Length: 589
Ligand code: ADP
Image 1 (tube, rainbow, N blue to C red):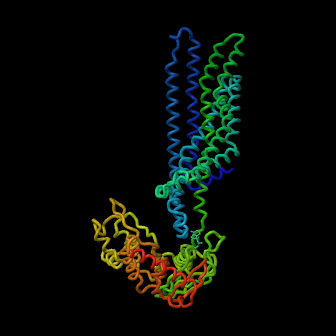
Image 2 (image 1 turned 180 degrees about the horizontal axis):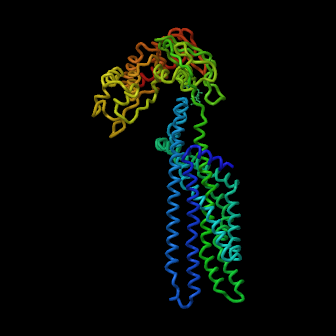
Image 3 (image 1 turned 60 degrees about the horizontal axis):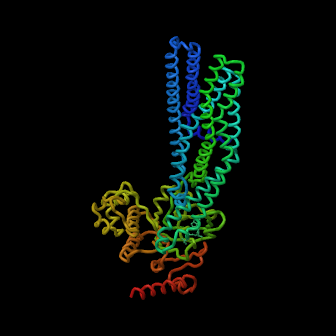
């Protein structure tokens, strides 16, 4: 039932190409049947040999029959290749369509989700899962059709020549089949899943372990400090051994049954020939001895089918985990913000539906104001800023820009209105010029240069071998975190949107970089509404308004001076900050 639904889902992606898939099954089954024909010619050859024995010169048709056997074997291969060609045409189309649909969906998802999910994981889902469906459709299903056709053809052959021998050779097949069912039944599918989980666990721990190697080295720890990793390996080991032991007996019997067809045949041969051997019986016996290995081959092929179905099921579930995510809504009749003010009305937001990252937050920022969000780590500063850029939609309340609910602003207009400078700005592997121009593809070179200058990037440009045309990320051209952030500021500068969100870096490696980034921020802020996520208090002194966020709520707001006078959390944070600065100065002095 489940398999059927997987297949029909895949066929939806195939569209008109589904007929290629069906054709591939027919061709593959046909090829399997044609592949049995050579055996019939072999039978005729044996027959002829037995008839003319011992006067072998009389055998006239041996060569013809031999060549006919070869011919049919070749035809079987050619038909199979034709089947594979059909299946590949459909399979590639399905994989492409799955990829396209997933990508189309992903671009409609909230940006916050994509960030959280991780681009690596998304890529893996989209690429690898669609590739799994490709193998399934291109190879596994046609092979399955062949694997079903072969036993049917065999059955006819086996019973046609000598039904007694035919039935006898079916006994081990039936036995093997029963044992196989016990090995691949639903209980075993559950086991397979457990096996996958144990394997996943182990690889996750391995990644953690590799990440932790610097710590191990720095602190002179031994591998045993990674107890979790060792535990995962041990668990896996115990599981695999138990699993293997469980399969040992059925596998033993399966192999014995499948390969033991000869035992039945020879015993039967002895039994049936008590009254003397006829040529015809000898002929049939020889034929059965030749053809029965095909049975074991076919059964083994079928055995792996359920595993393949599980893999494609898993792949479709992964794809669904992306496709079922709700995209951001788009307004039917978009409206334009009237100015660059930002208002939040009783906003509640939760990442997981259980704990609120923001609870009942209301605030209003006038056009051109510079405001700062401060507060302890995990207080909700980043979340709040993310909601203003619509990386997520709040569960309750609304966010307005220029008086318009941001859900009613078109995506492109919102992007033109709000820019975000992230803490770890992502630069792509392209020249600096192109990296900046991403913000405004039609910008001229002069315009980009002005933005770079204003963002204090000229020192970076000057030191690089090819200036603005230097490609980042190649031939040892790497920029420090602060330098990357300045390029990102240049990008936002070029965009020139009326509202800017700045996520300040938490630490700078060198004071020179820090002051340049500060200057770039100041340049960028001119004439704009600026929302700053402040991780260090030194930058908030000049802000028009400071919002203190703690546990998802705004506990204080006002100018720096007002908050100092109020004597709340901000004042305490300020004092701590001062102490740390003094401590730092004393240490450096
Ligand atoms: P801040 O920026 O003030 O350090 P955040 O806005 O990052 O705070 O976090 C607010 C709360 O939301 C914290 O409790 C944090 O654990 C939680 N949180 C932040 N990002 C996520 C996320 N992507 N998924 C789940 N919870 C998150």
